[in-house]
Length: 365
Image (cartoon, rainbow, N blue to C red; front, side, top):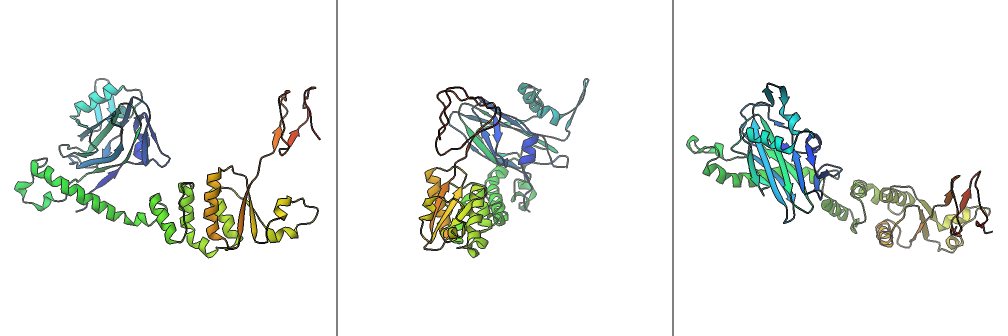
């Protein structure tokens, strides 16, 4: 029988109490900051069945040798505390920023919480209860990350196949077989998620690069954002069908630069009226040359890598030129120019109404 999994993702992480931990935009990876102590207290995972038996808590952690990792786990059937002061939800105490860390640990201790040191794959066979509470603490200098957190409620696939006399929970045989159960469960989970590897929305970036090569597109170079890579892979079939057209180039630049560009083909410049001023350098280009005007600032390395990508979609004789446009300078009503101010020749200065200029300001013709 397949295992029951509880994934710890965005919703559980957002509702948890955290200190010294910064999640990525997609909440798949938690970054550990330079704080001396990082803490993460999760609210209860509810199995909806009293006396539930828990299997395994696993996650990936990247830590330095100076860091110590502690995991606390407790299971109870009641998520409410009753005392002379009133009624309290354990979730509210665990997730509160006002409750001291010592008080939270004391509460976990009262629930007979287990403490694990330096482990990222933890057996929870000794725990029994409807609500599972988990806490992670990382102490020490350095930075790191935590990801792929998951709770396996079942934990074992093989014990039920044995005679009843051998099914002692948390015994030697149970813990020994858990090694093979963990391998089996991980393999089964990878098989179940194989369709995700073929989906551009969920596949890892390395796999997306391979998909691009399958479609005849080289997306290497580490200059593309993950969002741009995913979109290029999604539209790879359509882009290949449009290869060699102006629309294809326009779409690629929009995906990569996230802005519209101006594409000037040399054979169309003659159609402009003589009254339109055109840079002489554009007029001197060859008949198969294409100039692309972009506003986004780019380094020389990014320019070369972008050209390498776009050249895969242009005709063989086409020569591409990337021209980066400069923004014009604008002086507002409160701008003050002293004697050291300089307006360069290729930047236009705009002076609005009520501009005060003293005797040290010179406007060249």
